[in-house]
Amino acid sequence: MDNSPVILTMHFDVPVSKVWKALTSKEQMKEWYFDVQDYELEVGKEFHFFEPGGTSYLHQCRILEVIPEKRFSHTWAYPKFSTGETTLTWDLEAAGNGTKLTLTHADIDNLAEAGEAFSKASFAEGWKGFELGLRHFLDRPEGLGTLTFSININSTPEKIWSLMWDKEGYAQWTKPFNPGSSISGNIEQGGRVHFLSAEGDGMYSNVDTYVPNFYIAFKHIGTIKDFKEQPVDEETKKWSGCIETYTLYPNGKGGSALNVKVDVEPAHFNMMNEAFPKSLQALKEMAEQ
Figure (cartoon, rainbow, N blue to C red):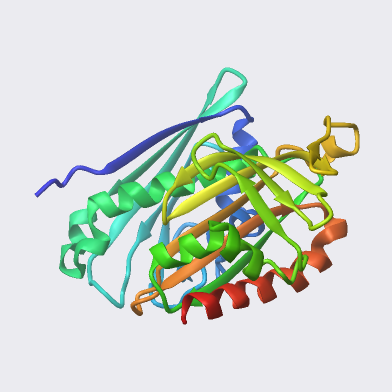
């Protein structure tokens, strides 16, 4: 058995202080990581949380070490599935004008009794996804907030994914935003995509990250008028570069949990909070047929 830890080294073009706050602030963690209700940054304190959009995988953690802007370490366990305990450590150091961040997840073999879902390979893949989430959060344009939406769907990731990005399926589940919504372009790594209304207005975006049936991140670039991409003007610069991500997880109940994160200008929070849950419910109903 491979007992070596998962080690992931990341580099960010932001100061150490900004990365530290993203890793240790309860409010910021909620935007890119997990929603942890009982968290306090103090050695010895325990905190708990579930997977995004679900209640199957209870995570139990205990803070082991806090060295401000240098190291944050805590245990990582799943008490419903195993008596074993692993250790997760974040090490930070300045690298030029940016930050080098090293994640070390050790003692994963202590969870062997819990099965393949808790293997080193599974954690390695999962942490790569969270690296993307952290990177997108740190690169978010100033003045924007991130909204999160989740839903459990009793269907396979493959069927849900197909419905989300198939032109006919997309037009159906996005009706709460606009009855004439459409999508065109290339849903692939680096692809250019147009999100359009029936009138030909909308937004053009690049596929920043693409892992089929699991994760997609759109980086929104600019507006479309009369089906034509418009140059990025001063107003558009306020949000250009913002990210919208979709992640599908097994929900532990034979279905899937869909987690959506959207960077939004505060003026649009109410509209998003009203339309997105309705759209995801429509997607759920389609996928469960």
